[in-house]
Image (cartoon, rainbow, N blue to C red; front, side, top):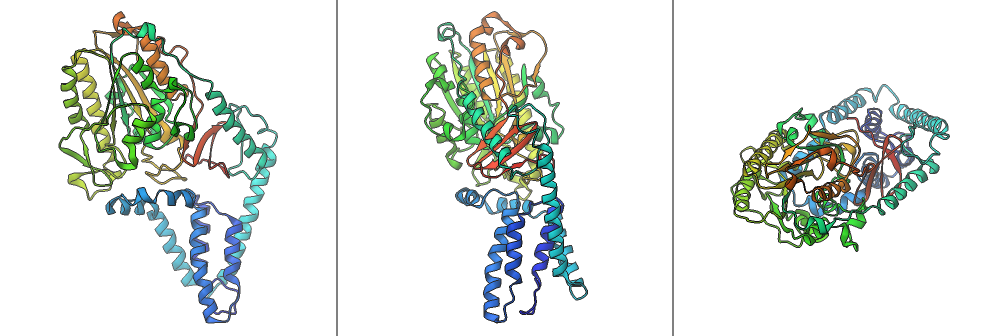
Length: 536
């Protein structure tokens, strides 16, 4: 590149690649920042030393602008996760890198680079790039203004059930204010909801409660592998089809489960000490004479998971995991035990218990991203997910079967924490969960009543209404109040009477996704709001 010419030189490749990626919906495009970078690169500099400095400055700026245009989380959020990423083994880090740089991305880069070197002596590539950017800028802003004009009269209502056509990104402060107002109104309404167990009637009731807390399992993952008709899912008396785990990370999801007697709180609220003890499921059950057990098929050390659950969930127990033969290797090379092996020993221990009044929280990470079979460590974790999923579903089915044979009264709740995002979409690559999108947080929650020769009246009930953890607190309350085991018969419809419905709103630390006017929107720290493109 001659220093006196107004030309981008090899930087044309950078902008052409970004234009192609943008047109294919792979990245967003911040026109102001990209034009600023372009103008900086076009400044004619005659001195070789200053030209070198210009290029040296441009390189990190270009990387930052590209990162900003991607669907990746804000840079400060990504940097805050560096301590966790440092614990990943090299194989998993390489696997993640291959997901970011897909075959399509590499092909686009190759084609654009090859075409540039073939045509830069024939065409004024810089002029074409600048022209293309201006056309895209005018076209994009014209479309956004037209959408805003067409939707102005429609989006003034704060009714979340009203159908509306809305722009994909919102510089319109009026609409942004509506989203923030809806978010605030949601939490205010949820703060008034609380369940109270009738301890006088329930204190004499004796049945165990087993909660199967599963990491990385959503309806979308099940449907992706066509396992929606697996025999385990048919076993449950009640199965939720639209249950929102309200987060895409394990620790907060289990904490929300253990605070299921109150309406949905913000992420910051659940991670602080809850002043109202009535919100804690464990506290209410403890008052009814329940003992507690927290069992894991892993060491629980990553992200201080086990300690977080005990503290923020008010469990007041020591986490336990049996020392069994390793089944899988976690992404940090720690051991994971087979769920069937864990429950074989657990069932033996339960058979010796005389009293049926124990709450067991069992947590499994057999499906977590980055997990490998010991004998297949060279194979990507995503490629073994289906095998691990089938094994887990089969194991849990066999567990229910063994519990039925034992005939001791127990209520089993399957409550996945979040999905694996095995399919991925335009906003997040496969395995990424920084944004709690609906495909990640819509998890298959099931309830099974077993033992004491109890019989279910009627068929399995599939709950289609949107629900969240308050519904679990309600079900536990109903089981206690209706004394189903002494009656030897129950109907799922009675347990579902007046079950609370919860609109979809999900949070992680620093990010939020919510449903408004039949569309999904996301934001990082309530800054810019964007429509979430759920399709792949």
